[in-house]
Length: 275
Image (tube, rainbow, N blue to C red):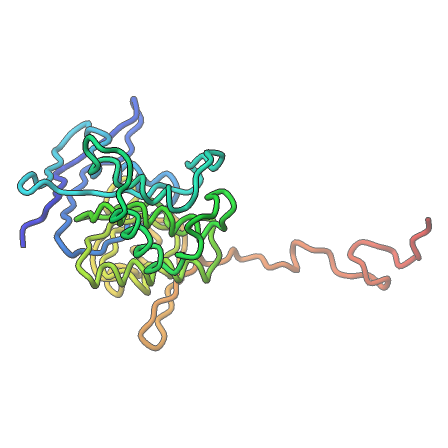
């Protein structure tokens, strides 16, 4: 199957500082891929190259033009201004801006479609709530709904679980996996290696260059992840699942916290505190 996006020997720099070097990457219809790597590895920059928001310093980015590739983007929550007075449903309808033509106001069919997507993401009851009053996980699903209403060929997400609790993160990854099963192509960045290992079938380890890419059980090794993150990583395989953790430093908490004295408080001589 031919890729609908392809990066060939792509490099990118901000001024004299290289961010990405020698990037070769193919994205195919139906693919679900995650970019993982430390902060500053170039993950968001690579997304912007895919979105054609940036031009490479060197190399080429090819994007399918016939039929035109429809791409929807879900940014990091921390980049959004929550003071704009808008409801959750209105945010979702903003995803139709490029499709609305000369008639910018949403039709009844558009509102029905928005409600269907919100219900699919289990947040239909929040349609009339102000976006700033929602939790981080709810806000992230609202922006996911905004992307889905445009019926994209490729869904691109930048850190979709940043700032949300573990249960919300699990729900978001489950919903993305379901969308992929329905045929949607997905590319995302994430710092959550365990969620990526559990839900994403293709992992790209990135730190300015692509260290490795492939199935989680292949690329999520201690050697590859230690090279990617420039630190010792621990990978545990148990009952068909992968668990990833950075190895702790050699010292323990007992070396950092003084031993309790007779009075029971670290560093206290045991006398009663006086007023």
